Amino acid sequence: MKTVNIALPKGRLGEKVLNMLDQAGFSCPETKENDRRLIFESEQAGIRYFWVKPSDVAIYVERGAADIGIAGKDILLEYKPDVYELLDLNIGVCRMAVAAKKGFRDHTDRTLRVATKFPNIAREFYEKKGRDIDIIKLNGSIELAPILDLSDVIVDIVETGTTLKENDLEPTETVVPVSARLVCNKASFKFKNSQIKKVMNALKVQCEETR
Ligand SMILES: Nc1ncnc2c1ncn2[C@@H]1O[C@H](COP(=O)(O)OP(=O)(O)OP(=O)(O)O)[C@@H](O)[C@H]1O
Ligand SMILES: O=P(O)(O)OC[C@H]1O[C@H](OP(=O)(O)OP(=O)(O)O)[C@H](O)[C@@H]1O
Figure 1: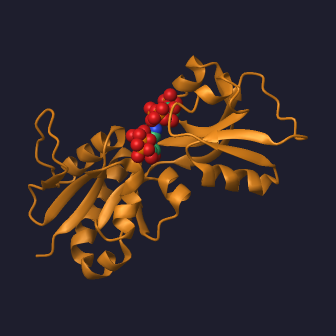
Figure 2: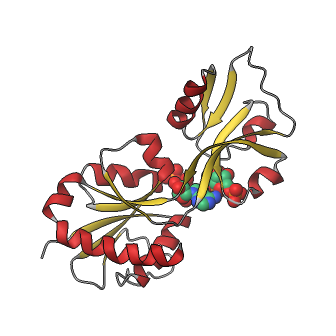
């Protein structure tokens, strides 16, 4: 039997994914506390899991190091990997939004300074509006940028809105809704089709139940 290699996102999304895989009958073996291993054989024969940084999942899948993986729609829109998007898993639900200091008004006569982890998404969003922007690429704590006048606005993930609120910022526009997607390497979809479909269909049942 061909092994299906699955790239899982570490962190907050990974926990939800593990839960879903477990309910779908594809349990990942229990990991010990402080376990630093990155590869696990599933209790189900023919499945191997890798733990990778959430923003790297698409790269592993695109290049075939993993056959399938779970990535946020934000990552897919930002990096546009050449993969199949098989399923909206309906977990990791949030949105990409523009936010600014309370009361901020965009004076369109000058270049808008936009801080973000997602330069391509931000660029496309403002290009469609014909708005001239200056991108400031950051890797985290994006909400600091407008407070310290590093930028006028941010383009970032908003889930509950708590981070914005606690930093005296407010969302001004939604860029795009975001949720986790099951993605698949194009060659693997052909050559491991029946095994991949088995995982996909089991996950489909789970995500339909949570809808
Ligand atoms: N606050 C949030 N609520 C819900 N989903 C989120 C939230 N923040 C991010 N996500 C989703 O979960 C995915 C993983 O986010 P997470 O914050 O765990 O990774 P990260 O630390 O940003 O990743 P990396 O270190 O690879 O840049 C994101 O790509 C997004 O789709
Ligand atoms: O609307 P909320 O529920 O408050 O969630 C949104 C926050 O979550 C994410 O940050 P993360 O925790 O990944 O931190 P980082 O971006 O600083 O790495 C995102 O970048 C926001 O800051």
